[in-house]
Length: 228
Image 1 (cartoon, rainbow, N blue to C red):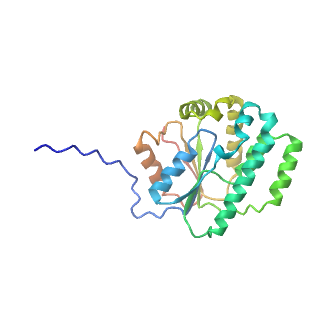
Image 2 (cartoon, rainbow, N blue to C red):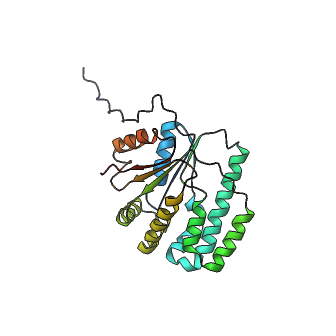
Image 3 (tube, rainbow, N blue to C red):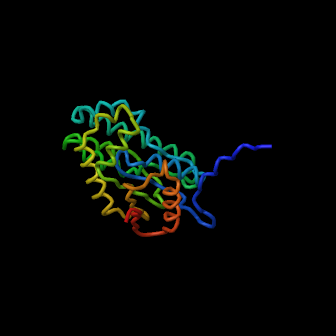
């Protein structure tokens, strides 16, 4: 009697005996794969997620079409949104659960400095100072890097309507801002990942290798460049 062929079991990272970081933050430019990696890590480690919610920002599509007209409300909406998320963490006892996030709260000021003029930035900074943004410090930050062409292709492939108007100049400026930011970042162990040749969606082995390398990190700054 014939039997149905069982589907091959998906490869999973070898996490036996490992003690994963309790709070992981994933960062990087638009389209680089932050949210995808954060969700996969959450599934692997059975973590809660703390995710950006760009779809809830009513100014974002307008900003991508005409940055000068909508930069300030876009940034203030994100800032207030993240402030509310952090307040919710406090209410849930933010030091007890384990989580993975697809943003650092510090990235808000990075974007503000790129998108706002001097007067708008001064107003934004006033609001920022009046908010209580004592976010938990990550036990590991993963910074995903990718060149402009890769970001463009990933943005095109995921097909989010609001992102169709993102200019190459804006992406390039953000890439430079992120590079400068993480050049000086020392608030937590940092893993800088060249994600140009990594496909954690279609190639599970890429994801497994990244996770297994990540689990070796306990301090300092590390570089993961699988293409070399």
